[in-house]
View (cartoon, rainbow, N blue to C red):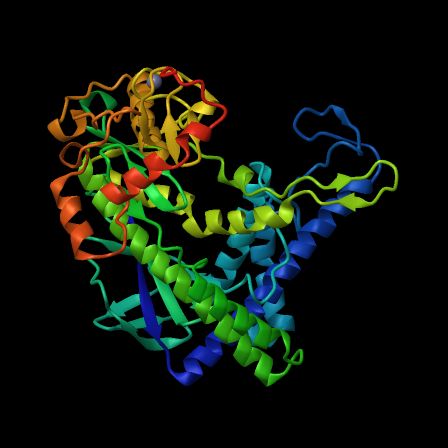
Length: 491
Ligand SMILES: [Zn+2]
């Protein structure tokens, strides 16, 4: 089993200065290697006709290249074998150190890992992701040691060529685990070290068999509430980045930053203030999501979520253009911007991956289903109609079933998983109890709809608790009769 632990480092002044220097050097080395590979590719690309080395068939220079990842330098080893780009650039490190002696101060393993990092970026590109980019100060903040190079002694760590450094040993490494690679990372609030540890005797996280699932909970992600559960509970969305207070502080700090002179000491200071706020938001969000993920996983054997296309949801609106004048018309992007920010702030994707991790760790499973029609289907009769839903209200146009839209969507998600994966669930008392149907003509009685616990909290605080009677009645009394789209079966 491989785990990753993160520790905060406590470097001395000279140590952190040294690491800063390393980052600068490694970054320029990375960029040089990338430029080298791009150049070699282009040189080979425009040369005349040649043949494919494997098939000996003639190749068209415009459509293919002999090596897809070459580098300048001797392409042949002494043994006659061909070198690939990584080994060519590794071999070139000797020349680099000879011509630029200050690179000798960096550990040679770290330099080699730097080349390997570029190769991973290329590998990602060949797998269909984006082309490697040149790094600047803001997106090159880490370097890596090879396995076995870093030694631990209590609350001190020995980093080759940097020396003994203190760190906060917040989570001791278990005895049976061996230390693999160590990555040193610079963040706004200091230096951190993430350690990969492995124990081969411990098996990887077991995948739970779908047939053994007895209970399940469906989750419907939202913005007013982070999620609605199919058992009727909900999870608050604290809006860490988009609440009023944080938005105001961020705005002030960004304005202060924008008024400073470029390159000034003051600008540096203001920039770090903005960055530290962003860092704080991210830390809060992470802590909250881990906490909630643990709570949710405890509810059932399987957690079911929608397979959301979040990237597609926050896409910019297409620009609209007037055909006659060619001028751009308003396309609604400015209105969508706030929604996009709220979606990104809720960070559903991160939340789901945390649930997945916690579930796997506690022998449970996360299942994803197709989100089609989950919020338009009636969870009682199964009727699909987009007019059933009016914002937060859901009134089935077929059977008149009335519920909170997201809560009943969560129930649909669970039902859908039962169909898609063929789950064999046992009925849990709490879950099988259907909420009492509110008919349009009955006055809803207090006892039947609201659980006792909720009523007490409602009495204690004046703030309306979601799902309590006041809200439900309010929701109910809203101009239901004016909803033009509903063909009510009661008329
Ligand atoms: Zn219905």
